[in-house]
Length: 425
Image (cartoon, rainbow, N blue to C red; front, side, top):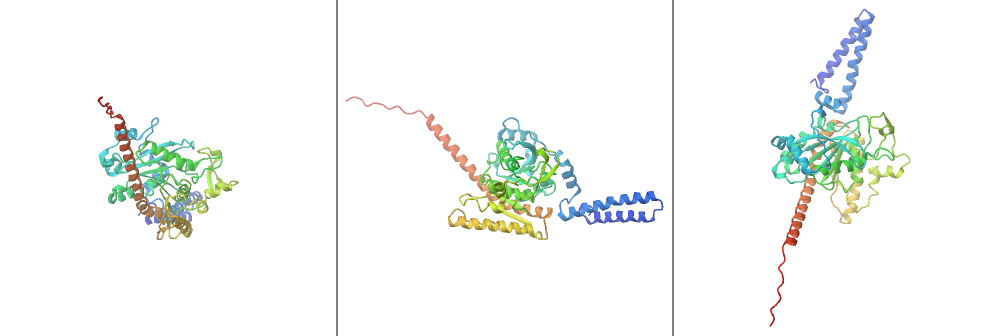
C-alpha cells in the first residue's frame, strides 16, 4: 500500500501537502508562511515523480528503486575478473571455489564482470547469470545457449534484475522446461544512464554496436562454457534495447538465431552521446548519421530489411508491445509484415517456411515496465527451445567430430604389419 505505486503513498503525499497549505493560510508570522510554502514544494515534487513512475509502471518497490538508482544491488553481486587469456575450464574452476554447488544447482549464480572490447576499445560492466543446470552433473560437458539482454534508456543492466525480475521469471520457466536452460548476459549498452547510444557505430565516434554485437559475445564465448556466437545465441531488449536487438539481428545474422523486440522501434532516433566521446562527459543530442545516408539506411531495420539478399537466413523474430501504445503496436506489426513478405519469397525458393508469430500484446499497457515484465516470460518461453535445440545439435556434432579425430589418431598410431615375401620355389 505504501510502495512507490501504492495508493497509501499517494494519499500520504496529498495529506502532507494539504497540511502545509493550511499552515500557510493560518500562520501569522511571515517566516512560518514562507517555510510552509517552501516545504509544500517537496510533497508536490515527489507526487509528480511518483506519478511518472506509476504511469510507466517502472519501480514497484522501494528496494528495487534504491538498488537501481544507487547501485547498492550491484555492490552485493560478486565480481569475476578474467585472468590472462582465460578459458572455460579455468572459469569453471574459479567459480567452483567461490560458490555453493548444491545451492547454485537450485537457483543458479549471478555475477558481474568488466569487458574491454578488443575491437571497440570500450570498457564497461555487465551481469552474467548462469542457470542452475550449469552446476548440475548432467550438464557438466554441455555448452549452453546464450541470450543477450539489452536494456532501455535511461537505464542500465541492473534494471533486468531489480525492475524486470528476469531471474525468478527464468527460474519459473526452467521448472517445467529444464532442458531449455541458457546463460543470460546483460551488458551496459550505453556506458551511463545519461546516455542513449542506441547500439550504433557512430562514424568517427563510439563504436557501440561493435561492443554489444561482437565484443561482448566473443568475451563470453571465450571463458564461459557456452556455444560460440551463432544460431544458439539470442538477443532481446525493451524500448531502446528492442531497437538494438532488431538492428543487430539484421546486421549480424550469422551471430544470432533469435531476436526478441519488446516495445522497440525500427529506425534510429536522436542519440544522447558524451561530449568528445569521453565517458562521463556531459551528454548532448546528436543525429549520428547526418551526412552518412548509407549508414542511416543500414541502421534503419524497417528500410534495410528490403535490401538484405534472400540467400541470407535471418534470425527468428518475436515482438511484444502494450496494446494502448498504438505507435509501438503499429511499428511491430509493420516490421512483421515486412518479415512475412520476405519469408514468403524465401519459401518460394525453398529456403525457409516459418513465419514470425504475431505481436504479443499486453492488454491495458503502454510503453512501460509492466508490459516488459508481462512479455518477458512468454519471450523466454518462445526463444529458449530453438536455442537449446541448436546448442544440442552443435554439441552432438562436436562430439562426433572428436570421436572421428580420436579414431583417426588411433588408426595412425597402430603399427602396420610388415609384408613377408613368398619363399622361392
